[in-house]
Every structure is written in C-alpha cells, then in structure tokens.
Image 1: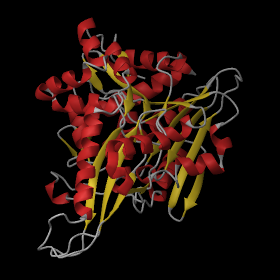
Image 2 (image 1 turned 30 degrees about the vertical axis):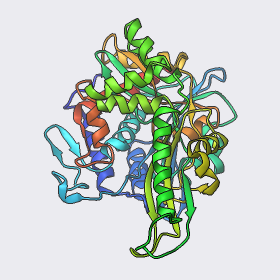
Image 3 (image 1 turned 120 degrees about the horizontal axis):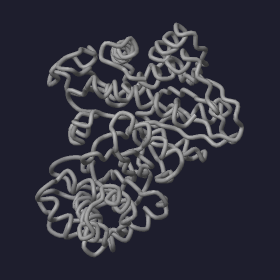
Length: 456
C-alpha cells in the first residue's frame, strides 16, 4: 500500500481526522457519540457494517470486524483507540484555533491530533482499505473505537469489555492489540514500541493540628508544617531511597545497542544515582525519563490547609501522584509511604485520592518478544528499511491496561515521522499547539496496513 500525498486514501484520512477534531469531544463531559457516528458513517459509506454501543447518554463505542476462519491463528484488534480529548486551558496561546483542524506548515493542527485521533483515523482507513481489497485474514481483524479514555475508561474500553466481551473475542482465542502510542524515533534507526505502562495509585495524606493564634507559632502543632515536611520526606525518599528496578531500563538500553560500559552504569542500582546526576546536566528530559522508568515515583502536587492567616492550621492535606511499575500494588505503595514518612507516619491518615479523572490502575506489561512483535518490526521495515523496535514502559495510563487484564497482549504502535524528536511529542501531547504532521499520517496508515498483511 504505497500511499502518496495525492492518494485518495490519505486525503480521506486527513478529512476524517479534521472532522474528529472539529467534533470537539472534550472529556469531561465527552459527548463522544458525535465522533462515533462520524466513524460509523465513514464505514457505512465503504460498505462496512459496525456495531455502536451507547454506554451513557451521548457516549458511545464502536466495533467492526473482518472475520477470519483459522481457529489456530491469533486475531488482531485495532484499538482500543479513543475519540475523546482533554480540555484546552489557554486557547489564546495557540497559533491556530484549537478545534479548527487547520492544515498549516505540513501539519493538521488541533486538540487531540496527537492523542490519539490521528491513530483512530489511520486505523479506520487501513481497515477500510483491507475490506475494499477483499482481504481474507487468517483470524479476525477487529476495529475497536472507544470513549472516555481521558477520564479512566468507565464508559469506554472498560464498559465494552465488561458488557460485551464477545465483541473482542475475549476468553475465546488468542488476540493481540495495537493502541497508543509507539513508533517514535529514539535514535537513528531505532523506534520505540510500548509494551506496558506504569500504574496510577493516587493517595491523599491528611494531617491534624491544634488551632491557635498565628502570632505565637513557637512549638505550635501546625498541620501545614506536617504536610510540608511530608512532601519533602517523600520527594527525598523517591529520589534516594526508593527501591530501583533496572529491568525496564535494561530493555531500553539493550534495544539501543549502547556500549557495555554505558549499559553497566545505567542499569546498575549503585551507579544509577550518579548517572542520573550527570545525565541531568546534559539532558534533563532523558534524566526524568530514566528516573521514572526505574522506580515507583511519588509527586506531591497539591498541598492545602488552614482556614485563616492568623490561625495556626488545624487541618492540611497533600495529594500525591503515585506511579507504580508492573507488579507493585496498593500494599507496596502504603509500605513505602509509611517508610518514607518515618515517625510522621503515626500522625498521617492515608486515603485513596478522589479525583475527577478517577484513574486507579496497576501497572501492566506484555512480552517484549513474540511473533507479533516480529510482525510489527517487519511492518515498519517496509517503510524504513533496517529499522528496529525498542521496548518501553509508558509513564501514563492508557486503555491498553484493560485488554492486558484480559490476557490480550497489547502494544503501543504507530509510525511517526522519524525526523520528529521525542521532545516534540512529549511537549505537544495535552499541550499548546498540538499537531500531527502529514508524513506521520502517511507512515501510520501504511504501517497499520502492513501489520495486518504481515500477521493475518
């Protein structure tokens, strides 16, 4: 499927992406049914039947399939791919109107273009192309488009899996899935794929004090001071005393073919703190990345307390963004919170954080080597000869965790323009001037098509 910039398929994909952006399915509240209907119409115009499931008023999910007959061959899911997007907080700082979907300087601009509407559009178009060709897969190819990823998935991927597991062949036959967001260049000829993700177990620390007059703070039982001390203790513990897991860094550096000495320093638990200090001076972004990949992280991001300036605080709270590696559960989190707090733990009430996002998840991972990973690499080699895939655990939660929870190996996989630096992706996702270049659209459209041909 050699798609040129003048091809009908690419032009249709661009138009579909623009319409999805303009639908403005901002979550909350979502209203994703608008984009689900857009995709349903697109598929119907190609002669493809699909099923739409309304999980709540104005919220929907879509499943379509091309059936395969080989009971012994695994199937493939395009998705879960979400159509909801995050809000725009300061639209006045954008170069273009955030929901205009304007084409400018070789990019489609707009909220959600990177996360992850361009993947939705290219997966839909690749699915349609295969259907139009009369492609007969060995096993089912399923298109799975969902709502509500940005607020936890209760009305999206999780809802479909709970209510209609048969639509995804769950518990029937081996399946693989591709979702957000691999295919980004990390070095010359090296592209990441996401084989798992960290968990999110957010906590709130509650402190009590004794009210008194603010003019006499000496030896006061001040809840705000306790909260401040806790934030410092947790940050210091996370950086210096948190147990380090070198497995995921090891997978990364092995894939990058780093020399033995560099690999030894980065993956050695004793040398890692020194390596992070040195790396932070040269490449702060990479230092943050390696740090997060090596341990459970704790970030005290909201501190609140007190009622009046001249009253010693009787109450204070600290909300923690805690990200866990696969295998680390709630008990692990509580153990290290108490250990980090030391004596202060006796004065701390630890509860689950209640947030709008509602995200609480365990880390999940899929194998870094398999017949499916081989097929992904071959699919990319059709577009970038001799390119190699490098496994990576994502820092944030995605809908992929729900499929991994059903024993479906799920990977973040697409193909971005190899000239795009990773920093560009990191800075634009959920950020100002979010946009996707047309070359990445073309490459992802090709690689999804190639993957099905290789694997099914």
